[in-house]
Length: 186
Ligand SMILES: [Zn+2]
Image 1 (cartoon, rainbow, N blue to C red):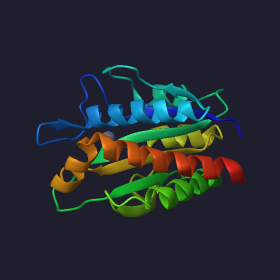
Image 2: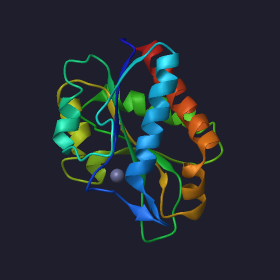
Image 3: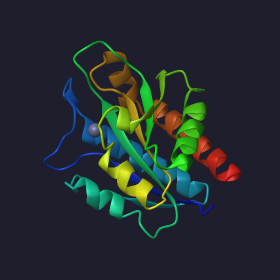
């Protein structure tokens, strides 16, 4: 498989995503995207971001950027909720069995770090009837795609971990391990 990744830092511009404790989801997503890009490029990957600054990009447009690139699509988000909850999740769209394999590979690698616990892989149509827009579009165009909820921005422990550079690097390295093991078996 081609070593090409389209990385999508969720939200941006007028859309901050979830906000808690003065921290905006869009900023964490972007920091993770930059770290992922830097580390992937060191390993010989070609990486495209759906945004290179703090700008608003509509959901469908993000997915369409992956068309024709012959790579995989990774969307980065943070969770939030009114109830106590923490941990990361890896979401996939069920129409595309390859996306589920990618989700499993990334979760298997990510759960080897101990900073943010796993909540497992999740099927997007279990949350919304038609799934997540970016995953649905990629899936229909046969692009392996996952959406990673990196942690709960509303949880003090997750939020503190998400803000730490060393932990960000460690988690991104695990995401890359997952991507590489997926590409080896593909
Ligand atoms: Zn989000």
